[in-house]
Length: 143
Image (cartoon, rainbow, N blue to C red; front, side, top):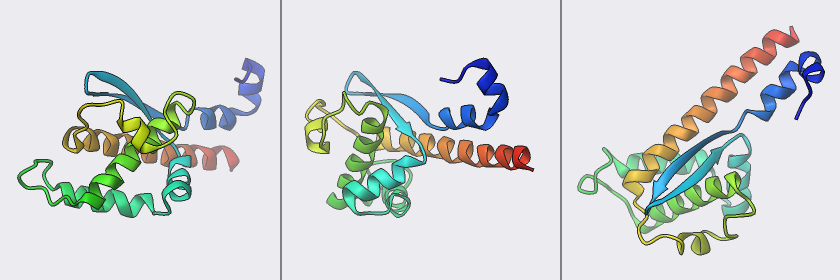
């Protein structure tokens, strides 16, 4: 954490510390914290070998209007969703969340994509918006 003098000399460093956005979502009666930051796409790519942006677009189109009846989900889409949720939960609490999505999912009886995915997409959108604003502010400070 920066001291007050350091924060005055390096205003952009403090901004970097708060770049991540977190959200608690209730899953099966448990409050689970998820974290979105610029590191998530890299962590996702390293762990699963896939592009998070492409997967999010595919998930959004597969879920449709967020109802089971109108959904076009296949098993791979469900796996992408579970991987995305796990990586964002692991990012929030690396020492508390198990090391694999399968182990993590064992903590829940139910895990509804229709309830959780819209909230994760919203969290990701807030993260992207925060990054864009921070870049604009950094450009103003940098000259």
